[in-house]
Image 1: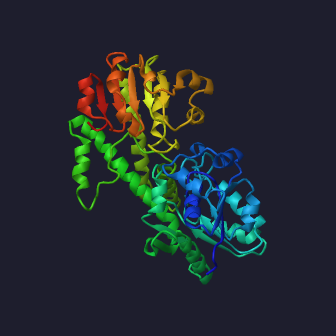
Image 2: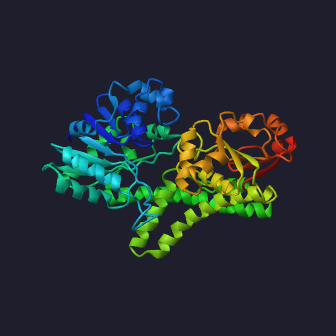
Image 3: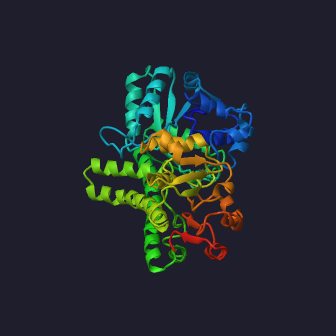
Length: 464
């Protein structure tokens, strides 16, 4: 088995940055270089102030601080890093297609193909290429075809090594992974490549947690894992709607069914909906794959998970509008949170975007506070929807640095991200300077119902 001494990762995003930082930290004898053509992003990774890294994850800045400049490097020199590395991770974005065949469901692989062609152009010796992005089944074969037909007579082994990180706990997930999945060819050289990657992870994880499969099983396992988790969220969210009609309490139902050892308690917290880069994208990818093989019933089943999630976000916004006397035009509504979950600055598919968009359509005046998401990111998320002009978005929605001051003369507050800090606010003081009646819509179920009602709020919690 060839000993790995130099690793390159193409893509310095939410997967590549943290994953490579942990590998460098745990494998001091391996030089790890993370490359990206985005100069601004690389500059952020190299910033002296570790609080200004492009990604916020608890524990990340400490890991980066220990290894950066020693055996962890961030660079825009993609070709040199590819040339020097024995193992190359591809960790670029694979968004859902917005055009052509498979629009709205299939993964857009243009960035993956560009990476493969660049590797083929640069590589002068044998390489192990590792898929780290979320990819549809058989992508490894496509990468192999590109490399074999455009390379410089170099031998490439393609591995699938899907990430199973939850944003907000990514560093812990990497350090104490339930499992690492490595898919590759069942050939002597394929087995050697799988063992080489396994040896990297064995620096800190028990070998029995590192599962080796064929490449197709590995690719599909990632999609299925996220689909199953998202299915649980959508399932309990549909029950939350029923609870609100019947005076049942969704938390009590979650606790009751979570005690069943066959079900378990995880991913049974009702909320305004799931977000993030993976759940919706992976389910839609699974739907597309099923339809492409003529499995319409399978596709319909999984598509319903996304439909139910969209319903939950829409239902939350519609409840705000109907409760505020069927009009929010000109009314000041404060959104607490914009990230799709706490402890991350990632906003991809965040429920907050959909809720804000629905309220802006009704001409509400929105103030947004999120402790980690930048003003530029918030406006970029809204502008991407194309619902209104950028000028209209900036006129109707403002981003505030002060969550308490923002509530003065506000009609309502909507909690759309479960930041722990929101639980510690002086809600009596907030109530005192809001317009009356003062409404709070808790889309994350983080506050105590009796306490909020005792203060005087008209308080609405999802699932009650």
